[in-house]
Image (cartoon, one colour):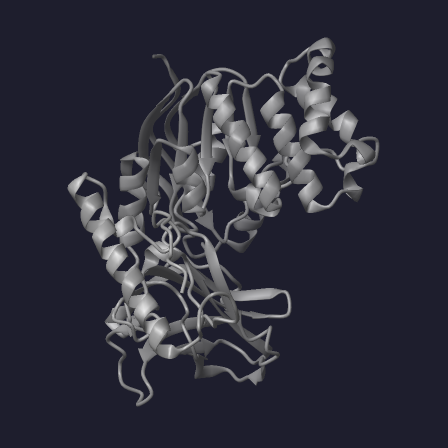
Length: 464
């Protein structure tokens, strides 16, 4: 099958702290000022956003692109979309290209939604009758019929994203690049988008999908490419690549994690995380964390200046990237009123981890008002061990869901006589029947571990 995308030893370098001269006037003024000063400033730092990336994608493939923030994923998509050019190397993208890299990309704020649809179609080289033929599908998919003749500048970010994706998916494109913008839409529209991308791949179009939602990537893509520090770390089967990517994060059982060496971080830098510790009640390192345990995390940080109203956050995600909880001091109105310049530490205490056993991934952040100072994604892995929370010897098992609750069943009426002895007798009888069913299924080649009280075979219960 012919290749739709070819990337051959592509690198992209940026000079940090140096603005590019996009106009002749700026270049001349810069040269003149250097002559007048006659002093040579410090050499700018070079950031290698991409470093020798090579890959090929066949026509009709749906490929996932994963990696930490700052790894080079978005830079690669911008190069493939010809928004920017590589410092070295060669790219070849065959056919019409549609890209959805940022909310509202390719839209003119003063034009209406309808006018922007025609504008995007014209940029792709489509004729008016071709755009008219796709117009009804675009409007129906975006679900903004009542606002189609309203200027884009009055759209919400979600409306912009819906129209942008609908335009990119339904106009005559051969290759579609989609960055993390789907996070703006609601769950129902995200599901529609994933279905539309799958249909595009089945129809012979090529899709490159960037996301931090591992569940969406695994659901949509058979092949995934992991980008790390501007290089291709792994390329292959989606399940294998995702597992390797998730295993690369530091484990919480290390008790103390040094965060100073982490380069992939976002924010102003006015405050930085230095270290995080996982502690028990006695301030000792917590070696094992079980489902239902309490958890105490100590964050060590440093402020470069005095910062008023400093908030902290811990995000917990499942092994597929689903956000389980965002535990932050803004919700509880517990900001540090004035965090002084220098080092400090703060404890987060979680009384009850009602998560099923398994691996969870932690992200942390510091912010004040609308200004983020230090945001780190997936800095640690928290491994929860099984526990006998209910005291039955059966344990809390991940096959029963993502979370568990303290609960009890109380018999309130019917043929039962209500005595504790009879309840125990019936519980023992059901347990015995369950074990016999599991053995029988095991003989027939089924997996006994998939049994649960909700999928036991129906049976008659003798009246009492």
